[in-house]
Image 1: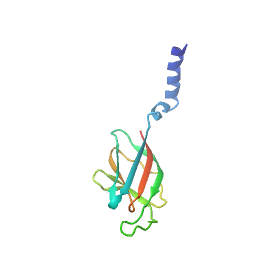
Image 2: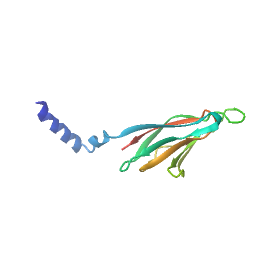
Image 3: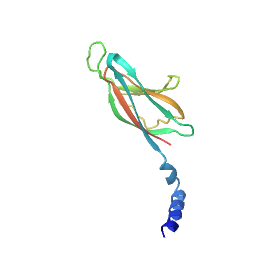
Length: 126
């Protein structure tokens, strides 16, 4: 009985408009930070050939403290750069990620701020 039902279920999912392909979306997380002595450590990620990255969600963003006076930094932001370190996307304070879609390639996530700054993004690759 089970063997005869499985092809029917797969056929219905395919006919429903891509429900099978959406199951192959991979959720990725990337973090960039600034460590001691204001050493910037960007997060690296790659969107594979034939795929795009979308549905970006900001899950954390902290600006840290200045490198010279150790005072808190109020401005929060980050930049996504391509493999040549050219700006691809710039986020400041309360920006929107709704329309961000990245094509295949290597990218870097770099946070603004000082010591202790960090940013984490979650997104889908499909």
